[in-house]
Length: 388
Image (cartoon, rainbow, N blue to C red; front, side):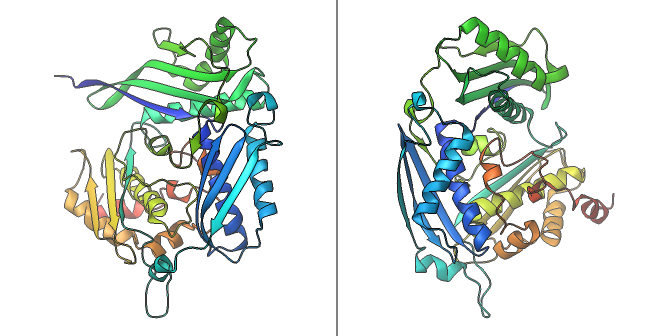
């Protein structure tokens, strides 16, 4: 009997209010790390109509005063595309409030390495990583296509292919699975903010021709249900339409709902925060296990106690697709991956200013040189250790 189901994932553009916040938070993180790789950073951002608030805890030797901070906020907003006062959120006119202070010494004493003590985790918590061989990127198809559609939507705006589009936008893809393998795309939803004078008919035709068809390629067919701006109008958007916050798109950032999530957001956090770095390590482990053909699908969980270096637990789930027993896979993980915070940071080279690029269009499934957690450089060693 065929196991058939639909699975849906969504993404958003960099001009979505929550993603503006992620971009600003990670822009701050990058600036601190650029000047001081040992910076401790936890920066949160909120946006609404012509207003930005940036707050958080930072301990750093970086020379990054309030004037430079404000300039970075405005540059980030400008780069996204909010440079028009009609959008009610404009790089030139928005009010900016900055409230950064130093990290609590109670936290610092647990995460700072000394001659007597290893670097501990920056917080307690649980983190997940996921990989599947259903796509070349070893990502679930619904989120992968949603991310590519959102990225294309931004590209046609910035390249003036569709000059009437505006920065805010969302995408969504529903994929039919049979026996846990994707077989066809059933529904695509694209919502894009637009200039008031453009007609719904033109929006629909242009988005299909310039965004959806190029992204789907040979996956495109006329039977796919398409919904473009289903309300019929999307003129008011961005922070004027909805307030935004850092860390509110954690499923967009990861696997689109395939694979679980421990709840911790990424943006604005330096790699001593296992919310971020351990999720990257979980993806790195899961991806290498799938690339080594030890399983078709794999989910990895790590968990930590604040101030303690060793993870308190490791869990590997292959959903019955494993080629060797799961307890052997766990043993291989322990032998081949250093899962202490300092080991994660070292293996993945995470003290670099690489994070703003992660703030839009997903942290996983991207072939960018900075995304070290996407490498499959452990796959061959895992294969050999497994006796393949």
